[in-house]
Image 1 (cartoon, rainbow, N blue to C red):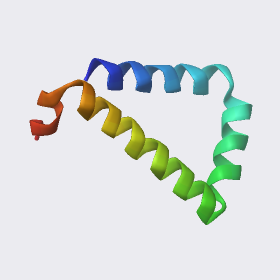
Image 2 (image 1 turned 90 degrees about the vertical axis):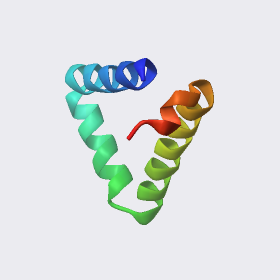
Image 3 (image 1 turned 120 degrees about the vertical axis):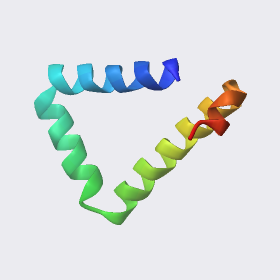
Image 4 (image 1 turned 30 degrees about the vertical axis):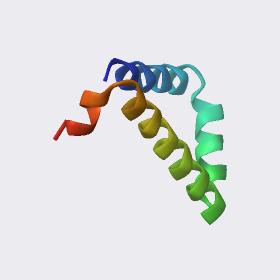
Length: 61
């Protein structure tokens, strides 16, 4: 859970400090189906790594 919070905090800090670059990356990645697939796979991999590290994470409602 702490890893998830730190990840989100890192993403927010990155977005705030590099607004133009982040906006460009989001537009470029989400304008195609391939970009959406990449983002989805990254999110699933992150969730899986969190579940493997902390077994109680799976039982969280």
